[in-house]
Image (cartoon, rainbow, N blue to C red; front, side, top):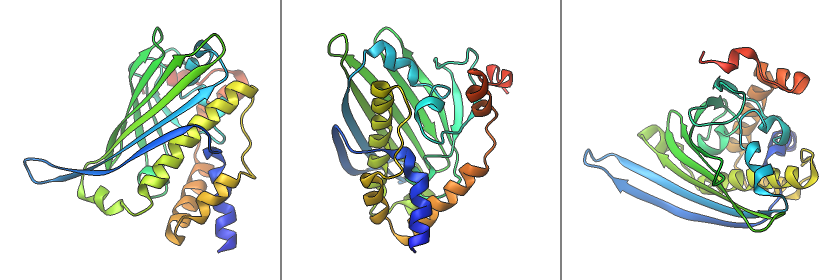
Length: 249
């Protein structure tokens, strides 16, 4: 068990230390006309970043995330200018243990809004069991301080998704969103990617998982390790993504 926990913890390096204000609303149940049940989880996180909004905003991008999310990998489907904008599409597996309760599950992200004037970006997440709206919005406080609000509305859409829920679902999703905010904050304030190998928060998170959940994270870690990401290699070597990702493929 110790070996599984330690190995799993290495994957969880991407999900930060605890800072800021977080709100997690309890699961709500909505019954539609066809009697299907949909569960919704709302998570809202607020942090203060010691950096101007105009420096933070371009980092909310599947390409720039190679700079500040440890071990970030994705498959860019459409990113015509090599940066985020409305209509950008990419797939990723890193969130799978958190929002799908399985390893190797794919979630497609679509940029619905990229408002450079008001520093607002909205994504739609879609996978086999859920659909969600994820918002990151920046509010300048002064020339060097910005409030960052991360807001996720997560919706289970079918019985398979209902079966994936457990007592840790809200906890895992909240941990993921909080970690994203903390990684972004650290990068903006220190100009380098955070190293969380000895994070106490990460260790506490792992200790609260069941044996099955630890194995799910281990499975996903192995999947991520084996995943080929041509854009990651190109960006880290040349500072740009592959030409193939600059068009719909």
